[in-house]
Image 1 (cartoon, one colour):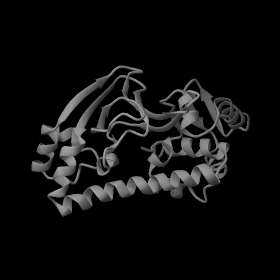
Image 2: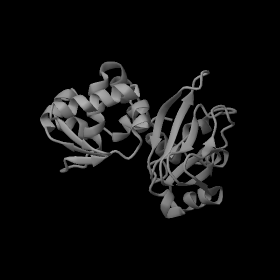
Image 3: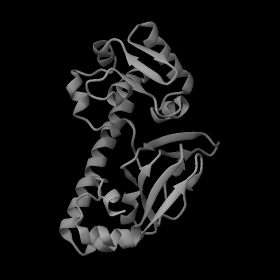
Length: 238
């Protein structure tokens, strides 16, 4: 378990003894597809490291409408910032998009360890600051760019360097919610990009036919600008 946790940016700077303490206060968690991990408003006693699968973090409106806040990918942690609050409660719901393997970390024990080492506090604060920077970038995307630009940015961000295609690894309705567009708007944007020969799509497989054109739609000055920003800007939150 120590080697798994070392993969998380939040935990990678801990020494072996500290990681051992984390493991002693941690437990493996398995979720089936669709199974909930916690609900909005539940007391927050643990934060989580995702080893396998995908987890969606979302809020429910009083009418029951679901808004995706984050799609957590393997190697990421979530709900960790809550450990610094008094009597914290989860501000979102969490459920598995597919069968998932997680490690639940005792937040109170972890916070107690941080109080013993200023250096460790700065390591953790650095990781959380990176997350905050990503969230600020996401706010820019949502407020300064339209639906078409957001979809184009998502595609460009998720294409591996040197490649021109990708497989959408989440349902389109979930992805639309994550990008703060309506499902019908997402479908309309994809159709228009296809008609304009910017992309082609078959099922969940997307091929970029006009990389420069897609970058222009994404409103990027240059492709390197996107590569320099964390992909979690378009996929994370918490």
